[in-house]
Amino acid sequence: MAFNGKWETESQDGYAEFCKLIGIPDDVISKGRDFKLVTEVIQNGDDFTWIQYYPNNHVVTNKFIVGKESDMETVGGKKFKGLVSMEGGKLAISFPKYHHTSEISGGKLVETSTATAASGPVVFVRTSKKI
Image (tube, rainbow, N blue to C red; front, side, top):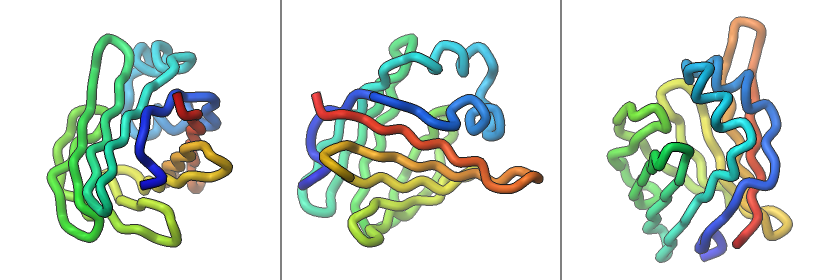
């Protein structure tokens, strides 16, 4: 149940380059650059509800069970079926344009998203503190 709770963005590394690569519009990137995203996680064993509160009252909610295919949604609103796995304490899923992991490290929620560009991988790391 380590993921349970509300988390607020503390730092972001690689944000703009990653967002541009996956097709997020420049105006949305600008709004989100300094936004303190709140992530709410409700965990009951392997059953998760993962809610992210973005600028302009945009909310993305994904419900999933680790190890079972689930209906998911990207930040851009694209719906897809995904399989969330648990790899060494990290939740992992492949979104249509990137691979994403989430873990608790040092009491913080650390989310790492990796997309591939012609020049190689582009990595975005968001670290959030519990609120």
